[in-house]
Length: 296
Image (cartoon, rainbow, N blue to C red; front, side, top):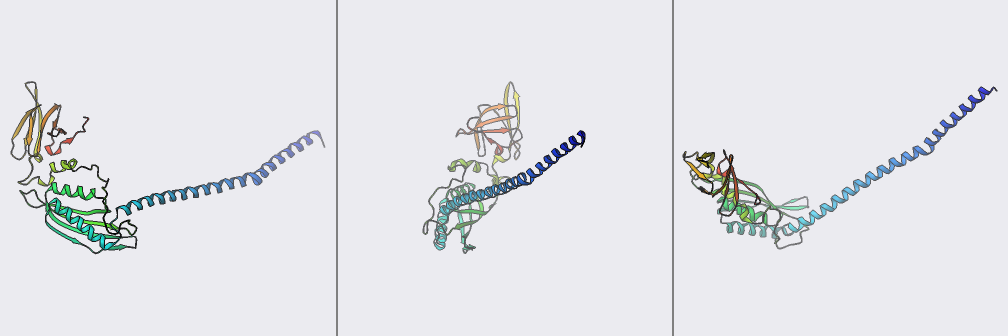
């Protein structure tokens, strides 16, 4: 064999050994290793799924424990009687008139819990309605208002006709059989009824009738510079009357009362007697004034 042929033979042999080595490496080592990695990834994914389910189960367990603490007594008959007594006492204490109260039969949901339904009809002011909602959601019962219908009873009256549908739940694992929870709920933004009186001041149900609050149709229509003094002009769209006030003067219209402490551009700031501050912009009526934070 010539030298050139020997070199070619050696080179071919080396190539064959190289390809054979790669094939052997892929077949004997790399492929099984990739399969192991893929299997490991699948097992890790299964573990992640199981860990997620376990975490969800733990969270659900905590929720169930909380719900059982809020639940009406596990004795359905006692729960219905006690809750109805609590609801009736609360409504009477608030002072609703023409009360009509009814309770439906308990409904069991696949053995998981029982639903008690109640219907209330009555008449009261917006202030009484706000107090009702405050007391209802301050009580840490497993209950909620499913439907609330509010109808102004008549023109010239502050009374509202109320129709309320309520549901309360009884869980079999409740830790009480013959008494309601006495805990105070933390679901409200504020635990003080006075903080919700802004709703009463902006009585939307009195707009347009003979009993309508003047704040609903009295608008800040202009801020005018007169003799180097800014004046805020308030116009009643009901009577056409215009009230012109300077900074430091008191505005007393309808249920809106306060002192103008700042006039700037198209805005004014009014401070009420209880030191709350309200921002009003030209084009807005008094009922649309925005509450300012204390640090403003």
